[in-house]
Image (cartoon, rainbow, N blue to C red; front, top):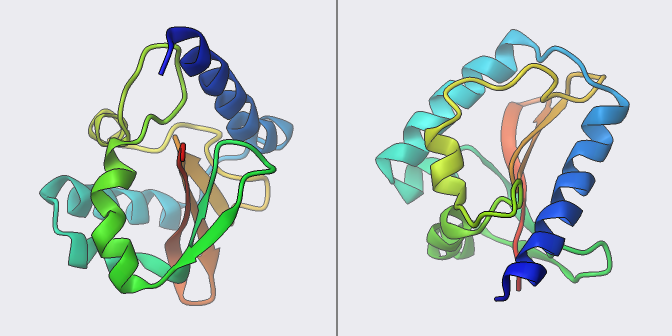
Length: 144
């Protein structure tokens, strides 16, 4: 992928991800910080089955553009595709990176990561939501 295309995608994703949060920045509830700490440690250990325990299924995959196809995956598909989720570029800068690098460098959620309602947060290309059963990894954005 060309540097120009990567830069355009990075700027689009940054705008898309920050749009919701910028409009309504809020301090995350303590439960979100606890979830992230535990989830992050599991991701860094690389245990795909344990990571899947943090996921709400069907898990949603979205493309970089709003017009991109949205796909749903079950647990088995998620485990199979998890490595791709960790190697995708989070789109936060013009320089290529990976979600695993972002997870490694994000020991704590940044202030303002959560929605105003405190029931949603994002880290790079990954989205998390709070439901009655607790916090879950619910979606990822991937370049197709």
